[in-house]
View (cartoon, helix red, strand yellow):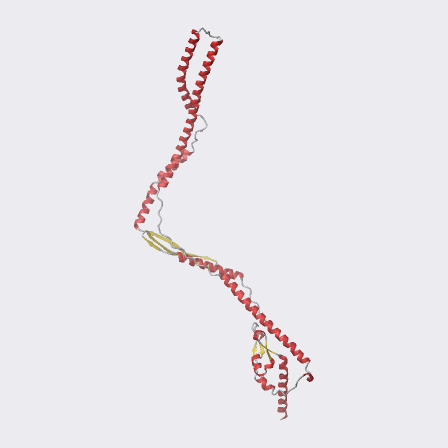
Length: 364
């Protein structure tokens, strides 16, 4: 029995992924090599040289080293700037140490009064108030005495009460002024202490900002070139699709061929069933069946899509059509097919002819 068309093998996913990865790695290495463009400018030169390689999944990837050489003038400027920065390092270290020491010192509480300032201001105010109020008190007492208002009388006590109230208000005002000055002085002292802590830090920042930065070559980078990796996965998918389509076409052709043969088999069965001469129009003798079959060569062949183990004797419909066209019909897609039922009488006639020849030879 014919083996028929075989479906294409399924693609190896691991092999396909490995091939795509290999393509991607090779593409990345090629893109890197394309973008390593050496330059020569008034400021210096830039060049790239191979420095080694490493392996990724069995694939060698080269590595490169960038070599930058400044022009003599640029190199001299760079050396001078670096020496200047180096000379500033001792000063910077001292400022760092000072900043560390100052930062650990506690700051005064700005919310607490500066008692020394408060006392000093109040004493100053008091030195102005005491002589004035002592004089006013003496004058008031002299006035009350001249008016005949004796000590201990209601009028005397009322006058002295008013005087003392005014005196207390004046001294309270002096105290308020002293307290306000003490609070302001506390805030000032806090700001001064905070500024003292920040001073070495500010000096260090100014020193660092004044240090020249290491110059770089003002060389413009060329535009980058990229390479898209080969779509190995897509190519594998297209190949698999084409193989599948070819298999489907072979399968359809095979089904059509087998269908035609089945139809011919059914027709041959009908011919065998209706072989009575009463249903036939009988003509002359056929002639030499052996001579006819001599014109039909026999080949060792197999159907396309079959294994080589299926080789067997076959005749070609094109050869048979030349001598016995009624035994050949067209199938699907203009494929010629043979009607075995029409060959049986020819084969019987050939056997009869050969049998007669054998008897004739035996009778001599």
